Image (cartoon, rainbow, N blue to C red; front, side, top):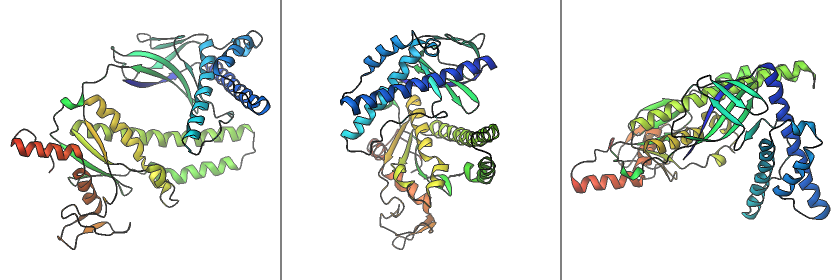
Length: 386
């Protein structure tokens, strides 16, 4: 199992200059290599492989001082990144998907470089990250890396005016989840009014991080648009706008981490709807609110935490979970404005999202199997809530 651990870096001013120069060099190498592949195909109808470009890189380093200043494996990883981009491009073409041709990277569109094997070392006692040809950079180790984990790669990432180190760590596989007994199960309905509604009636409010900061972001954006393009003042104002967006992302991410941890620690089975979020955000009236809620990120966090804890996460068919009555199973049509489920057949009346959460749990194969096993044995599996 692989996990990524991200830590904040605090480079000195000369180190920041070096890191920025490396990003510029890597970006130029990426664009040059992309142009080489593009020209070779249009001119001679030939494709250029990674190994051919790696051979050219070895020769170019002898005359280019900027390439020579960067660690060799970092430059090789840039070529591998481009090669992966083309592989994904051709894969999408074969599947008949909408495949965009790889694009050239602008000045602010290339923000990371990777040490794929060696060239980096972590001094935990001194809280330093040693990078080849750069030096020792102060690092904030806010959480420990498991002793049994093996660090495979180190990626240096720039996020506006902050620098981060991302370690890809290989960890032992967790115990098989089939050994865990399902005692507590929960159905989760994601929404916009309430971020989560559980089948026991509990709700978690939607913080609406972007919506609450939207006016402030718009104000700073207007200030940026009034600056002269290419000026230092516009660059500074653009940084302020980016910092606001970063703060919103961090608030949302922190909230989702806390909610997903609470769910994983409290339940043995967590059931979500299998939503097509990519298609849902095509609705111009709901796109901003859905993106602000971050359903996909929350589900992703829950899934990887559950994999470590041995908890089951299941995605069920989302068709008619809102329209179906959770008691009698009849279809009760509703519009988006209808927030109360009132069944004319069995008389059930409760919140729309609560009814949906109950239906979601009832569609879980794990939940149905556990209830059947509990009924046949007459003991052992206390599924909550029923």
